[in-house]
Amino acid sequence: MKTSLIRHDWTQQEVEELYRRPLLALIMEAAALHRQFHKPGQMQMCTLLSIKTGGCPEDCAYCAQSVHYQTNIQVHRLLDVEAVVEAARQAKAQGASRFCMGAAWREVRSNRDFERILRMVREVRALGLEVCATLGMLTVEQAQALKEAGLTAYNHNLDTSEAYYNRIITTRTYQDRLRTLDSARQAGLTLCSGGILGMGESEADRIAFLHTLATMEPHPESVPINALVPIAGTPLGDREPPSVWEMVRAIAVARILMPQSMIRLAAGRERLSPVEQALCFIAGANSIFLGEKLLTAPNAPPSEDLALFEILGIEPMPAFSQFS
Image: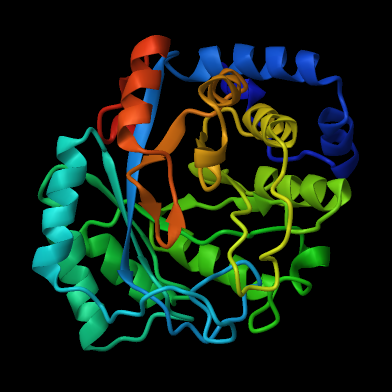
């Protein structure tokens, strides 16, 4: 691997020039870098489970779990440890190497619920899976406790650019997001941080968001690129999701800016045809979510995934191979 290709000093202008290149040339460069830094045909398979659903005090305009909006989700309290471990076993049997747990909290509180989360992490890790969690804001001490329990990665998406952020969320700031990522990094956790396309942001916002990620040192080990899944009852419920060309462009740029990172084709994948998904993989995406749900949003059916992987010759990436 040519580590000299890994940069953290990208300028905004450089990212803009990269983003505006002809799409075919962009895909070809991204694909070449992908082959240099990753094994072609190998895909990181992740599963995401909502371990506490709904009742969140945040006002994220895309989210069905906010108390600010009337949506059709079923609210439930924190799941029992045994139920989560069983879900992790099933995920592993289906080929997942990373198990992600999401709780609709504004922030982590050091209470009995957090102790239960730590038990979940320990027991899922004991299955031989990488473990990721997304629990809202947290302190360095809480991140250290998660790390000691066996957590592999912490997810906290930037969502969009700093300039556009308060058009989407007003109950926390962009700096809150960055502080949470810093807390996780200080504790020795790897980072999972990406964004959502199709929320009304401009191309300049997408460029700025990618620039923020690309100038982190080190880069987030996982970068989810999500397409908005419009949910009735939310402020963005009537938005038109981004086109496959917008998704491919963002994925290719992310791959070039962050060659070593796992670039995850995340929410909105169920809208894409098999050919469109394959194009995203060619452009540099090498991580997906398995299962019929991503928290509360729909995901591609497992049977369709298996058929596509067979056609493309895709094999699951073993757990922890990213770190070996």
